[in-house]
Image 1 (cartoon, rainbow, N blue to C red):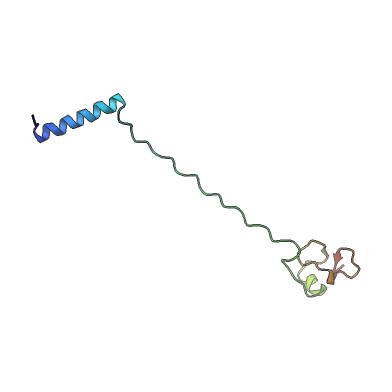
Image 2 (image 1 turned 180 degrees about the horizontal axis):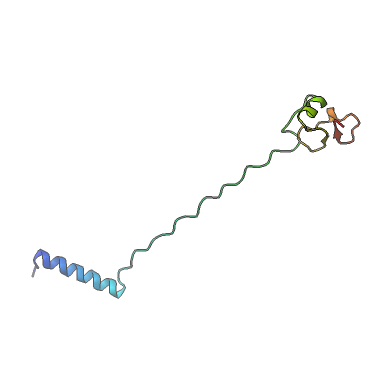
Length: 88
């Protein structure tokens, strides 16, 4: 026995509502948004090689003198006595 279209639609609606009430059809859930991407800060420049001074006058003009061993721009050519402090 076939039902008219309106009755079929109503029966389908009530059947779906009954299944939902019984828990047969899960309710749609929202998926949480992914966490924001973490951007790492840039790595610091390696010590000793990120600056170059042709001589101590250039280092003083740049406001970098005196240069200690491990400082950017330090090199043994600027350290006359070899004590680890250049452009004293």
